[in-house]
Image (cartoon, rainbow, N blue to C red; front, side, top):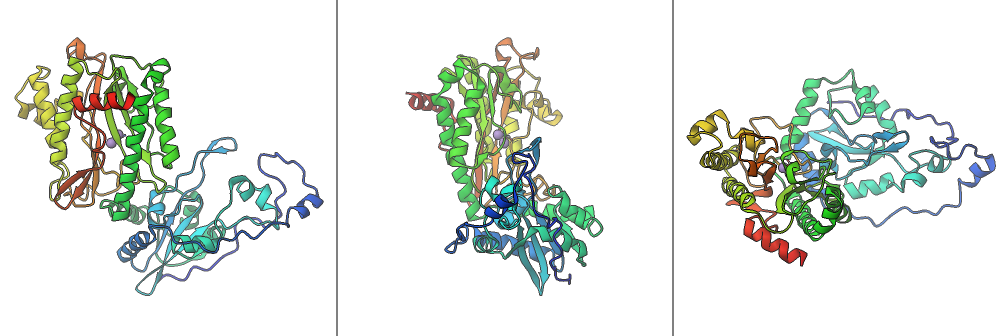
Length: 485
Ligand code: GLY
Ligand code: MN
Ligand code: MN
């Protein structure tokens, strides 16, 4: 068994802090420094309840503990990243840390310490700012600048995990003995403290386990995914209402409109919104969103609200900007719709993960042969993958706290695996005819269509979490007319 982790001397200097790093206050008189130490009320919160998902995070930690008996496990949230000079990107905690704790603050670290048959968890966090040494108002991470933090006692109650001062953790890890693993890539300071004790291979096993653990969602997660989708549906409605304003400006109006919904109802967007009008729809990750929005063309909007707990939707609709599909647009749209229907029908417990992709690709290949774009038979096209010139990407992926969730899962557990109730995935076939593709009729060029929904595997089949957003071409037109009137 690993030795108990004992607090070590904090890394940070105990010297009084004289000035904030950006130097806004170049000089502090002794009188002012003294004055700022006192006269502050006790704001300790004493009637806190645990976060709603505390039981679920405890169950997840128990599963992790059972997989790695007798080993110390270190799961960092990560640190702030500099955007430029002294401004930082918005912080998003590592999914591994957020999944196991429900906490989302920078510099946090979850440590599972071997104890008896299992582990004892401790969450290491920045404690409240010291007012004695001036850190409170003079340090860049002082609460006066960045906002009040929970005290360690408050955090212990909220997350159901005893909390300790993270400033003491690196030193303690350096001195600790016994087997240890860390989730890499988030906290260089913590990794440096463990550098002689860990191996890449063993750490990867920890990362893979935590990715695979998230393949099947619990009830709390399913509720959050539905919330993310519901907000996303409202965000799509918001966009339809302002298409005239987008026409007068650019795709940015669409991105901004959706973002407003995401920030008001959720934490953020789950990924960069793709607001792709006209031929931009054929650029799969079009996130510049600086193009024109023109009546008569299509808008491919791929966007998802992320909830406060980090669960994201991932929904795409391809909409006629003037509210009516042209004949060619409809023909291409309906083929994608039909492919998506076939894909969704293949999502059920016991089905192979690959089945929904194969089902959707078959429909698309059939249409491409029918339209004379590629020579049949369909079997030959599928075997050689010739349809891929226009279908371009896979038909879906797992969805959760990452838009492309569970990405570190082993191939046998995910891509070569079997669907189980509680898995949530996207079904998102598309057809893309590049503006400069000379192998297709001219009227197809510059048309890109994708339809994407978020599908939960249930005991007896599946549930489309995003069913509230119409998909069939005539229903899309009716919905657009009703929303914008
Ligand atoms: N929005 C990224 C994707 O659909 O996978
Ligand atoms: Mn997707
Ligand atoms: Mn998407």
